[in-house]
Image 1 (cartoon, rainbow over the protein chains, first blue to last red):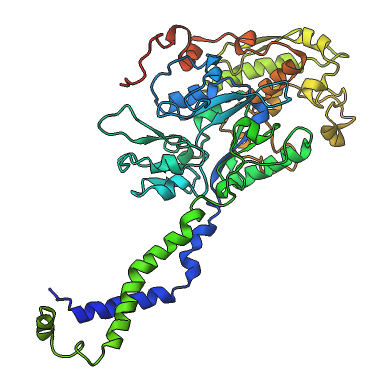
Image 2 (cartoon, rainbow over the protein chains, first blue to last red):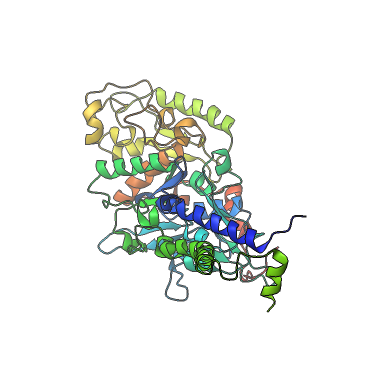
Length: 313
Length: 174
């Protein structure tokens, strides 16, 4: 067994620190300019088509093997539900997607909106998770590993869309639950998620995100009087896998229109990028300075044994 | 799977096609009634009163685009299809694919197309046309106004005999 002497250790860390300093900073910051996997799949949601039939909710329930609902999926009284905080329904651990009804000002018809995970290009949930339970797959899904989840609920706070839900009822092993784009049963095999396939109005169109963006622009260009000239999720929080076009202003359909165009991680990225440098380079660097400053005094002379003795004083 | 039986689709598709093929709008014969049931699964098929809808609409193109040769109602389509003659195929499913996993439904926009690259699937084509118009003319818009739910549908929607008990407990999952 080779013994690592103090001198060897210091020399090694100084060299390592110097190597880190020399690495181009651009590389370390590359994650900030990530714009999603090139062939990542997405879903274009056309709010003008939704009639609020809740078939997607039923399809999700069946596909994901979720517990039976409190009310039938063809019971439309759920649209009148108001939960604490004067909120409409939100996805829960028992329903990964919900449809809500909105009454935009001046519109003669209600607007329905399906809520589920938007599968961000750079997910805030993923970056907030300290046990690395989340993964953004090349197929475009944001999935998570329940076995790793410690139930800290950081992701619930981090998510700008308030999507991750929590199994509060579980006393022993509470974990996060959310829409996973039907990753294991469908997306992995190139199939659209259950909700998309079930929709009678094709509110949702499945395809490569970059291709769907083209369809969204085409629909708006062909019907400028019908659509608001905005694709919600094209730029919001760095781009989302699921994105929306609408005939009513997005804020009137319950969308948060004040979200930044940059990924949520950008808020803390500059600070976080400094942390490893401070923790690794600084000790080596300043130890190096110290060694240089004290060169010829007491360090660097004599063998290890005598050195240890000096330390013991 | 939400959509059932491809064999059923094919079999009934041929039946429906033969019904619709034999006719055209106004000048020609058209079926008074069309049974739209190729996708029946969660709901029964629809017995479509074609004659009534022919009377109620101004132009066959309101539903059949340019395929009936009666002019187009959409300006955008008119750029190419104005003056088109009646086509051999006028049935919805001749152009709108029923299979959600067919290449034209799975790949969006449809590869190889400059136009017609954003074509709804058959189920959506029916519902977008029917409900779109019914919303405008105050026609029936409830799901079961047009087609009754099947037993499979009741099971899927947890309704009817499969409805959750009134006092379903929130916290208990098996």
